[in-house]
Image 1: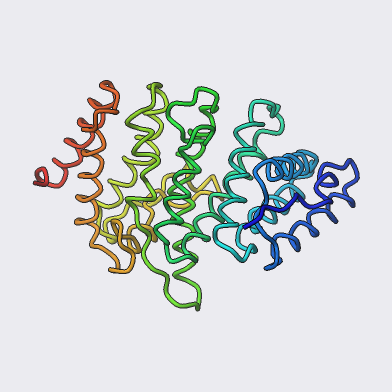
Image 2: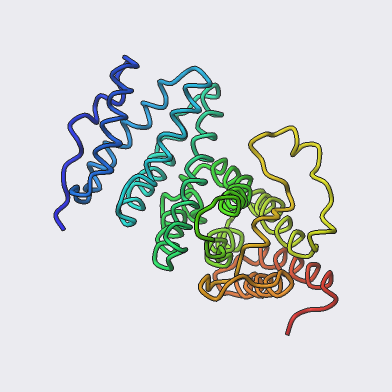
Length: 316
């Protein structure tokens, strides 16, 4: 398939005139939703995303920022081809990592919001694909490749992006699954947690930074293993800090643990006790790999041991 040029209106995305930017966003949406469009080349995708990035940069009022963040993230779902959606997502993450260090402190929060919106839209895209194995693998590659936000070896990637992803990843997956359970549409397939968590398994094992490992364990693995260990009727009420954050879901991830599987969505949901043991075994296996840093391996083994003891013994 021949790659096509970036749309001619791309330069208007970074205009100082809001009316021109708004018109360019609408043109972009129509362009991306056109079935006749072919793949955009890497260089032109970079140019397009530079324009989109600074279009968002120009949005100053909170309500305008929120609306634009949602509109941009929804573009992922408006693109008719799954491969083109993932190409657009790759462009987003490459641009975000590339431009992140230039974001001033006053604008940082709105870009955190944009990242959250894209993570949510990505889960909805993968859910719509019925958690297609190739799509999930491509998504993982986008996150972990050199220049990706969860790449364990690229020192150019800002740690704050990995921290933010750790903070919101389970929240947005839970939110996606909760919305699906309330809709009138055909029930969705369970989310395959092993492939979806693989970028964090790898980053936890290979990061050279102790603070990065600590953040991932505290915000991803410990809450998930804890949620999977508790039956629904035993779930404690959400903590006060969660109630103070309207964008956050409950720490217990009720929708997630009730509509998840290990790696085969077509086989249906898996009982939480079995799922927990399978994920712990996957965690242990990653810790045992030769690429895992020794200091991280010790921490991963300790968490595995502690979590297995909570189950009354290690799984064989």
